[in-house]
Amino acid sequence: MKMPEQQPPSAVQRSSRPDRAAEAPALKVALPEVVLAGEVPLRHVLETRRSRREYSDTPLRLDEVSSLLWAAQGITAPGGLRTAPSAGAIYPLHGYFFSFRVEGLPAGFYSYDADTRVLTQLARGDKQTRLAKACSGQQCVAECAGALLLTAWYGRVKREFGAAAEKLVAVEAGHIGQNWHLQTAALGLGSISIGSFDATALKMLLPIPQDEEPVYLLLAGCV
Image (cartoon, rainbow, N blue to C red; front, side):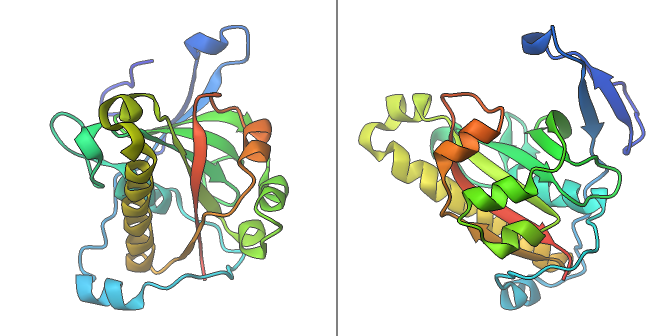
């Protein structure tokens, strides 16, 4: 569904997904304008970025989520070029956001559209406990306020780069992860990367396409 022009940043609307016509209309959330925290020197952000495993109960704001997702996979130039580099500008990684404690965003699992900066809810409810179980019971997963799951579609990358495909996807995931962590530091939040999880359990838990493979989980929360 085409987003109305000049729609309020926090607007929440419902529209039908073509591939789920028989189901209830999917919740769509237009994200607020990006807050870049430009007054924070880059050196300070680089020096203060640390992996944080403990988070407070304070929820994330929706504008903070918007900024984190833009830093990770935001569009920055014509042709769909993004904040993180991608081999051949293929961008095989898709972002899905878990909302656990976010002001103005119901708990659930969302697909992130980098072009429109809209979150589409794919599953309702709090899946934090089951996500933590799929991540070997790590407490940081059970405590974070939100998380970005990156899944890889290897099809075109393998056609273009052959045996180097998996390495190139992993490198791109690392670029995205660093952007996420630097933005959390700039916003005064905490974050950590999770690379060890049961991918099969995640695919059983979540409505993601079978030809996408979970590769990286990025957490964020207030500290």
